[in-house]
Image (cartoon, rainbow, N blue to C red):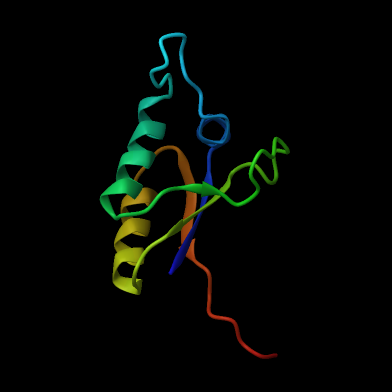
Length: 97
């Protein structure tokens, strides 16, 4: 199942750029680190929907693949509590018109 996440601009920029400080360690904000750690707890990784994009309307969207609906709903609940997240949701099933 694919979870779609819309991040705040600063968190999205940090994840898109993979910001590191001069020592090679992560220089990201705590809420961005929490996003990464939360996804990892559920066996997922936040991947940009539009890699390398800097346009403010496209940059904030990320996805995370999880094994089932129950896991997806738990991940959405946890991500929604993070200050760096604007929205987290499951894409509705495709339907014929």
